[in-house]
Every structure is written in C-alpha cells, then in structure tokens.
Image (cartoon, rainbow, N blue to C red; front, side):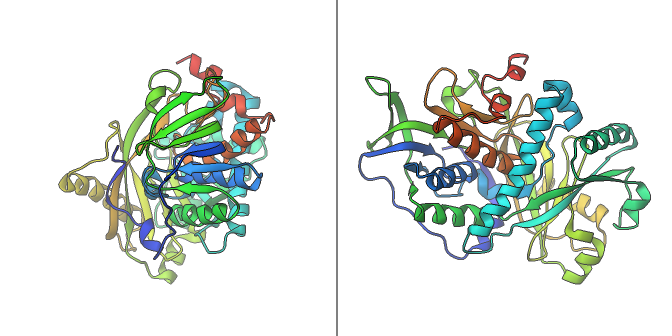
Length: 413
C-alpha cells in the first residue's frame, strides 16, 4: 500500500467518532462499483445513490483515510493554470466553460452541505491571489481582465489596497468572489453516512487486487484480496493517484509531494482585525504558498512542493520544510502566533496539461476514472460525479470532452 502522507494530520482530530463499515464478506452485484473511499469516491457514490443507481464503494483502508485527510480544504473556481493560459491551450470557449464548471462545483458543494446533518466546516469565502513579484504583475492583470470579461466576480487590488487591509504589501492581487472552504474529513465522513442512508453500500478494508471482463464482456468483475468477487456494469476508479493499469498509457501525470501545517488557535478578535473576511490567500509563484483560516480560528498553510512522489519520511527533514512555512507565515502576519500544532507531508498528483482526468476509458466501455489531479481536486470531484453519473445514464455532459482521457490537449504532450 502506498504511503500517501506522513506527520500529524489536523482534520481527523475535529471529529470525535466516525462511522465504520464492515469489509466485503460475500460476492456482490451492483450497477456501479466505486474503487476508493476518499472525496471523489464518496461524492460519486452520493450522486449515484441520489439518482437511484445501485452502487458500492470499495475502500482498501478507511473512509477519508488516504489523501483526503491531508486535503487543505480550499474550494476555488480558479485553477493552477490561469484562465488566460488555459484559453491559449484549449481555446476560449472550452476554457471558459471549464472555469464556469468549477464555479458551479463550488456552489454544488454548498448545496450538498446544506443537506447534511452536521456542520462540515463549509463557509463561503473569497480569495486573494497576489503577484509574488513585480515581474508577475502584468500576467496577473491579464488574468483579471480575462476573468472580468467572461463574467466572473472579481476585482483588482493595488499595493495600497492590500497594505491598507493586511499587514503585508504585494505588487497587486485579484480578489475572486464565489469560493469556499471546507473541513474535508468531516465532509467525507458525513457525506458517506448520508449516502449510505440513501442506499449506497460502503465497504472498508476491502482491497481490490484483480479486474477482468465477464465472458460476454457486458460486466466487470473485481476480485478482493479476500477472494470475493464484485460484479458490476460500471466501475469507477476514484483513487488519489494513478492506477497501475493506466501508468504511461492514458494518464500523463506527475506525482509530487507537498507540506502543510496548522497553527495553534488564534485570538478571534486579532484574527478578524489582521485577516479581513478570512480571505483564502495564494500567490502567482510556482510552487505557490497558500493560506486559510479554520472555523476554530487556526491558520492552515501549505506549499513547498517537491518533485518526488513519496511524502517525506524523516521527522528532521520534514521539520526543516515546516520551519520554512513558519517563516513565511510570520513574514505575512507577524502579529499572529506562528507556532504549529499539526504538520504533515503528502503526495499529490498534477497532470501535464493542468486538467483532471475524468470519464470513460476510451478502450474499455464501462470503466471510468475520477482522478482530480491538481490543486483543485475537491472541486474536480464534484465535476467527476456529474460527468460520470450522466455518462452512466446515457447523457452527454458539456465539459466531458475537455477533461476526458482522450482529450486533444493530452495528445500534444
């Protein structure tokens, strides 16, 4: 089993008890088998259950126990690739359509959270996207004009606008309205229980070790490590990294590692004074730094991405990176407590064309992928649930060709 994170995670500490699910103990037949019980798997399962489709989630560990526990919970319609660059890459119409889908996905998160029986930390937020240097300013202004042209709710802040509100000054920033934050662990756990009550079957500690087609090729047969078979019309791989059967064949991606930390609880009044609107903050530099607050007045900070797929193992080596995050936090907010209670390193994936991999395998009917690579993975999980549900129901989703595994932008790489 791949180790997806090391260190001490924050989000699992915010939920005192979690629902547990038995391993699969007998043969199973469903319309849809979902491999993976993280953000993408549970959101897909909830979407299918609400549509009345027989589905089961098969998780080799525990629900939300993989990459999702290390997710920092920023929900933004902006992506790692700027809209102006995405337009250059795939054309104006598709690029804007994709950004609009991300904007709608954030709203859909809010709608789902309203149906859940407990608070999962969803809060509507705006984001401050600042230029890391003067050299980045022209590009940032171009992005602002592009977003504004296509109807996104944005404004541009000058250095004086920024320094009059925050204890730091930057060359310029875009403010994007319509973003949100969430506690990913509480959300997944609560959504899983909600989906189970709606008919979704969930099995933990159920490792899928084999996959084949039925004799007449109209079913997929999955085999568990315990020897049980799952027969399904459709299979969805909703896991946090590239499936081995796709390695180098369809998905062109890179697995990297990142670092994150969470501070002690801050004085609420001081946080409100130094951090107006609790804006989520990120920057134009690559790799970029990002920050947000939590509902209990902590600060989440992350970044320092490195081009290696394994999370850092040595505590001393991890602390060295975490100290760099601490220094960056202190430089931005010298009046706040920059001591950390939690810190971790985690694996994450990035696609080479900066888009997620969502949709049916072009060579294997009924086999789907919901791989939300990139900094916007949670938002992509909502899009994946919609695209895959529509495809299973025989409907066309408007952005399916943009994120499909046979999309033109991948052929150029």
